[in-house]
Length: 273
Image 1 (tube, rainbow, N blue to C red):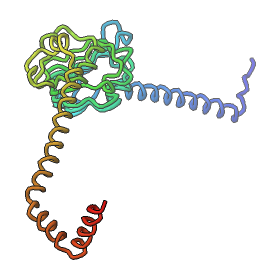
Image 2: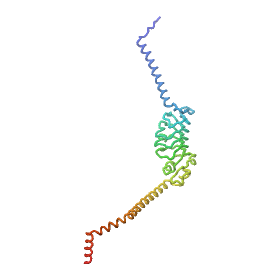
Image 3: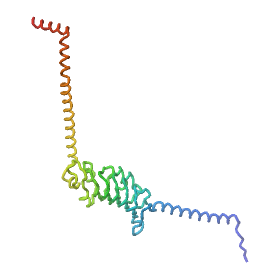
Image 4: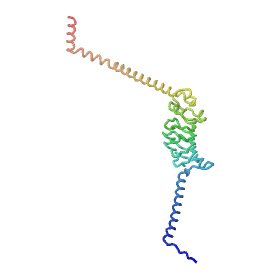
């Protein structure tokens, strides 16, 4: 009968501890992966997140409607594809508000209190964003730096628009939703006679930039004429108020002896000639 001799104690100790170390490292790796995944995909506070049918390939829908938000959340999952921020209290959209959302295709910002879109508000969304809803806010104007080169279908209805040259320049670069055709109404306009008209109808018939230039030219002419009239009126008033003093000064100069002698000499010379 053969007896199996036990291996040396040192190799056994190393073997056991190597296995334990490998298990610890594997556990740590799994835990870190889970943490990073959770940090990148966890839902924002007050929002509800759901995966699209078919798994992560369909993107994630984040609903933050009626969440009493005062600003755009900064901790949105980076795999968000559809984001609903409607019916909140958002006042402005800052620059780079959605830069961490490379998959975002639908963005609903309707029924807020947005009065300003800062320059670069939608930076990074130019290629992917397909639908943008800004209806029922407090927007009065748009500038090209805010919307950038967005190609999304955009709803701009039910805002208190100030229809002017700048708005007429920016809006044609956007793909407007049908709701914007009648819902985008000028609350104020330049000139004022166009207030209350649907913007797209007005922009189709009137060149607001040309009207603005004409209005500016007329204003400049009126201002110049006003200044000229003021100068003339001041000169007339000055002469009228000082004519008595002018007569007294002339009489005083004529009464001086030197001037009288010179005047007599000049008279004599003229007589000889």
